[in-house]
Image (cartoon, rainbow, N blue to C red; front, side, top):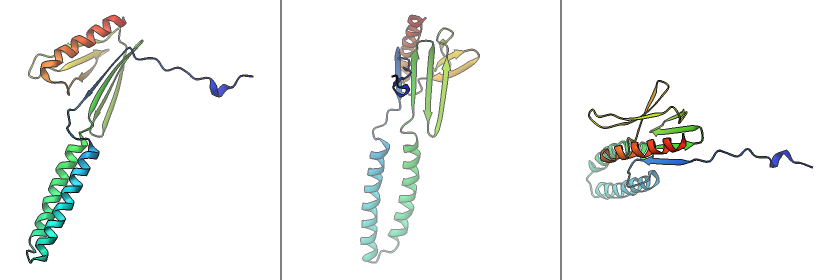
Length: 159
């Protein structure tokens, strides 16, 4: 007796995968902890100053914390930005996270060309069927040519 629940479709195995991430010192959770400790210390100090008669300190502290909170939110929003390039048999998948935006592009690796622009900042561009995707924005500029060559080599071995 065969069970249909045990039959699983096997996912294709990635031949090569590149994970390109922003170089951030703190994760968003660690950043929230730092901001929380900053808020706690600031509230304690402003309460101490208000208790001793300096009533102007708490409103100034509130403005300071609001400005710092906005700056921290802008930073934390982009702390998890990343690009993932996954080469599978018959497919090249590029996933890009930028803030709250997510993009997924799928290409046929046999038809993909990789170009390195020379004007201004060198960008690595994947081109296929009239579609262009810039990758490697989190890779240092001096390493982008090496990234393009590595992806190009992997695509040639896949063909």
